[in-house]
Image 1 (cartoon, rainbow over the protein chains, first blue to last red):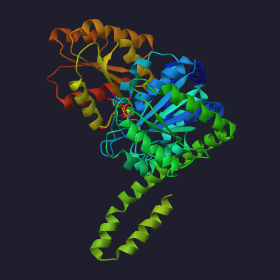
Image 2: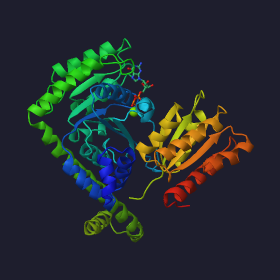
Image 3: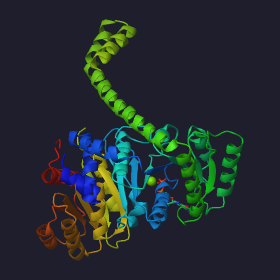
Image 4: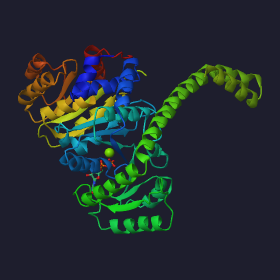
Length: 315
Length: 139
Ligand SMILES: Nc1nc2c(ncn2[C@@H]2O[C@H](COP(=O)(O)OP(=O)(O)O)[C@@H](O)[C@H]2O)c(=O)[nH]1
Ligand SMILES: [Mg+2]
């Protein structure tokens, strides 16, 4: 570990911060030492997760939240996850477009991450970066998830407050909201409220909440808020409610609890990544074995059990 | 985990559209790179600050306005100021042949003209990443 680099990062030197984040992101030995140091200092930042389907306005909303919080004199860290292609492993990460004008603000640090095979909308890397930014003294950390719908729910175990964005006019929004996502929000944010159809969406979400169709996380009754992230409408109201939620979280002993949950999630995702690697190796190694079974006519059940045994041994 | 090449693709200056830059960004993605796309109208300092925060291996700039001899040196200046001596810089756009050498003397690693094939761009970005950052690239 380079103590000088860590010292500079803690003092706020952006390049040092960034280089450390990369070391952490790649699970390098040096990176894990930084993570150790930084997570020992972490546990102070308030974390906000933003999810919702592509185009819902997550990045645009983050941009307005950055404005709001930096005006309060706070330091804001942003981590945004975009999908990696399962084929090329490459990623096109366009979230920054909506907030590039914030790049010059010295109290803002924005980082894009590719999901690298994680399917829950949040990656192990993203959690590690949140942990590191927390340890580096950021006051608010905002996470943008991939936004892949039903499976995009890992954010639940990662942040203090969750905003689920929904937009009018896409027709399937209620469908999407009902399928799993409706169970995770502390807030359902109807974005693009500059469009008249927003009213109907607002009403139907309100109705869903009132009729008990949504999940109350740790006893918090979910709220629905209308905003236009693009025009800045409703942001004061949203941030006021967020502050109330923060008070609820801090007052109810949930602040630390969620940090513990986030660390558990990190371990879980780390194990999943390792498991997947073993799985792939096992499958590769047993390709020939499996085709041998086929040609010799040995039954499939036996093949499955034998490969499973080898899988277990590898672990 | 093996390091993936991270590239910033940015439109420098006031050009009106970004179709070409997006095509390049997609090609780099399809070649397995992690591409951060910043969109239109970026200032030299914005691009460099983005590369700092993202810890990019290569900065890719698209410029069609003809102002490359004014704007690219400013990018190089800011890269020095922010300590990005080990980061690659490639420039693509409508650039007269006689300017190519000048850009390279300023510190640009590669220059792509409208006729460059996507394959060539990908290969050269890979080799810049490997030269500047020591990233192993499979060929
Ligand atoms: N009309 C309108 N458009 C918006 C609003 N918020 C975001 N958008 C637009 O919606 C598109 C997608 O926004 P983006 O923030 O990238 O969505 P994300 O994919 O969820 O991050 C962009 O063209 C935004 O300008 C809004 O409040 N009103
Ligand atoms: Mg986005």
